[in-house]
Length: 250
Image (cartoon, rainbow, N blue to C red; front, side):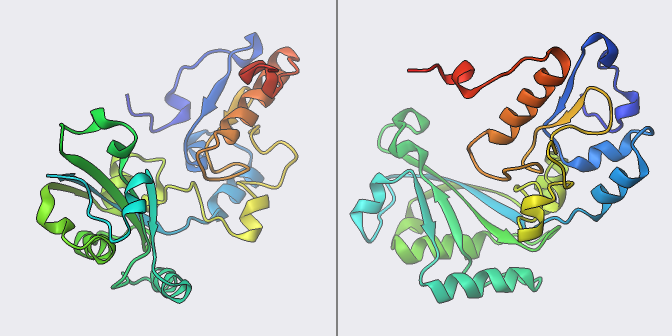
C-alpha cells in the first residue's frame, strides 16, 4: 500500500502507546494537517542533494580488473585522481552529467557466489547526477568501469538502468533520486531535518522519523533507526534502551 497522506493512515492511538516510525523523507510529514507551522517550514526548507543513476549488469565472467586485487573487494570506488573526482562532482553540482563520473561499484558475487550462476558475475554501480535528472548515464558509468577493467563490456549479458527520476517514482522516499535523505552539508549535518536534541521525535504525538534525513545521516550504520527507536521507546514506556540490548554485552 502506498501511503500518500498521514491523515489517511490509521496506525493506532498514541495515547495508548501506539507508535509510528517513518523510514521516509520528512516531506511525508507535510501531509499531516496537525503538523505545526514552524516544523512544516523547516521541512519545506530542507535541501536535497544530488540524485543517483544506477546500473545493474549481468556478466559472462568475473570482472577483468587491471589490478587483480580489486577483484577481491565487494565495493569499489572508481574515481581516478583526486582532481578527477572533484571535477566530476562539481559538474553534477552545476547540473551536468560528467564525462568521467565518480562511480561506486559493487560486485556482490565476490563474497556471495550464489548471487550469480557458476562462472558468471553480477555488478551494480551508481553515480551522482543532478537532482531529478531523467538522463540515462549508463554509457558513462560503463565507460568508467571499462577504464579500470578493460574488456568488461565484452562480458555483458544484460543491463538494467534506473534514472534519478525512475528511482524517485519507485521509492518516494528518494526525493529527486537522492538516496542520502537530503544534502549532507555542514549545516544539514546538524539541522536534519530540524535543530533539536531529539530530531527523531516529530511534533506529532507518537510519530518518529527514522530515515537518513535524521542524524547521523546517510550510511549503512543503521544509527538513524536506532536513535529513533530508542527515543520512541523512551517516550512511550520509559525504557532506557542501550546498544547492549541489541548486540549483547560480550
